Each structure stands twice: as structure tokens, then as C-alpha cells.
Image (cartoon, rainbow, N blue to C red; front, side, top):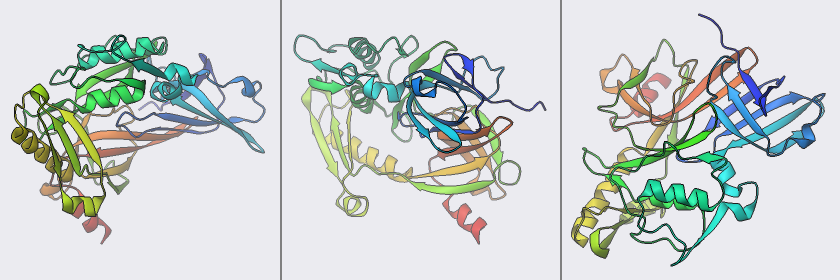
Amino acid sequence: MRSLTPSIRIEGRDQPFIQGAYTNTGGFTAATLQFDLPLTYGGYKKLWNKEVTFYLDSVDGKPIFRGYIKRIKEDLNKVTIIAQDVIGYMVLGGNPEKAKIVLNDKENIDGLTAGNAIRKAIQMANLDSKISTDYIGDTTPSISSSRPPLRGTLGVLNIIKRLISRAIDDSGSLPRTNVVRVVDDGVTSQLIIELESDTDSADVKHVFTEYDNITGVQIINRKVPTVVLVNGEGGVASTFIHDGAVSAFDRNYLEVSNDALESPAECKDFAQKLFRANLVTQYEYSIKTFQGAYLNENDVIRIETDDPKFTGNYRVRGKRIAFSPNSYDVGLNINRKPPTLAEFIVQQDN
């Protein structure tokens, strides 16, 4: 099999990097690319906010990462460059004023679905030259940005998170959230909205086995929302608080909207289901491997083990790629519905 040749390009020009790492933790957080250039590299002090792309293979048509340089660190023998993707750019937009918009009774995103509201918010913030929404789509189920309306001076990133958190699909065995992530069309970064993959029915993108292509496993403990606020149709709402979970996990909030709910009792029942869904998917796992570099958040993979109760499908949450000019290795964060890998990991460690 032909070996891959990683490539880093600044403003489209290949760079003689020493080593680097791409990190994407998922959950609509900024992906980061950090890489080292030789100290002899000229002009590095003028690189701030320049576009940088990372290709796992120099012949790839689309980069794994497209972002903008945010920090530069110099030491005795190298220059370390740190770049963030468009989600990181959205925090400041190269200028603090551009990353926020004012929503009031005259200028707002009322009456739009979540996808169209996000598109308009990005345009209002003058960020559409960096962040495209040609493929954004909409949430499942579709929700209105007017319930309740957003008002005040708000960051675009917070607007997106608040809108997406309101849309919960309740058609399966467990409620599923919607995912916003970045894809690259070969020219620019695009935002898309997807329903969280159902690990029972989604197409499997890759298969990993404990002996062939998994080199390590680590447990990651997620925050569990212990206070769940649900808004229903016509202004009805309810809040579910699990006192025992608050004592165990602290007070973590989740607010969603579901227009199919018409009474406070229905809202409270739905809130309990959301709490249980998050509790049973509390743990994520990080696997080390030398495959799966092109997998994306929300892709479904399969883990095969000798013990059938630990074999199953898992959802990709994020990934990390450490690379040099001639090699790379991959780390994937994954989760799933129970049963989990926890007992399997304990068995392997004993």
C-alpha cells in the first residue's frame, strides 16, 4: 500500500514542517492544528490570521483542516504555529465586534428555522466570507428560532449552540440531539447540521478489532446534565432536577424545545428521558490506532472483540492525528449506547 505524505500549506504554499498534531474534540468546539517550522523559516512574524490547510496526503482534493493562524511561539530551534478552524474564528472573527450581533424587536432572526437562522446570524456578523452555509440543512425535528426569541448582544457561536440544543429527535429508543460540524468542499469551510447517528441503524464506516488495529484504550467521563429544562408548544415548560445526580455530578444544565409537547407533564416526562439518555451514554472512550484518519464526527464505526457483549457499533465524537513528514498515528474519541466497553477495558488491564 502506498504511504501517505502529509502536507501543510499556508496561503496555498507547502511548508517544510518538522512535526504537527491535528485535534478535534467534536461537540461544536474549535479544531486545532499545531505544527513546528524550522527557526530559519522567514516571515513567520507576519503569519497571524493567515489561512492554513492540512492534508493527510499531498494528493488529497480536500483538506482535513482549514483554519487561521492564531498564535506563534518561538524557541531555540523551531517556530510553533497554532491555528484554529472556522469555529475558533467565529469566537473573535479576527475582530471582537464582528463575532457578536445585536438581536432586538427590529433586527432579529425570528420566524426562521434553526438552519436559516444560523445562516442569517453569520451574514449579520459579516462572517460569511470565512464560513459558508451552502449545505447547512436543518435540524430534525425542524424548530422555530422564535420559541423563545433570542434577544440582546450575543456571540454567533452561542446563538448556534442555543438553537441546536432546542432540537431533540424522539423517534427512536433514546432521544437524539442534532450535531453541527464543519466540512470542507475543497475551496472553503461549510457548516452542516446532522441528526446524531443511531448506532443501531447507521452505516458502519470502519471496523476495528482488539488485536489488529487498536493499540490502546482510555476512558473519558462526560458531564451529565442534571438539570433539564424542556419548552413545549404554546409556552408550556417543565424542569427536571435529579437531586442524587446533582450531588454526584454537580449542577449541569441542558435546555431544549419540543413543539410536540403540549403540557407540563409531557415536558417533564421528556426531560426525564433526556436525563436517562445522557446518563447511559456518560462514558466516552479514546482508542489509539493507525487507521481511521479520514473518519468524521458522527460517523459510526464497529468494534470487534472476542467477547460478543462488547462487540458493537460506536459513534465517533472526535479525533487527533499526530504526524511528521513521513508518518502519522490516530486517536479516536467514541461513544455508544450501553453495554459499554468499561468491563472489557478492566479485563484487558488485569
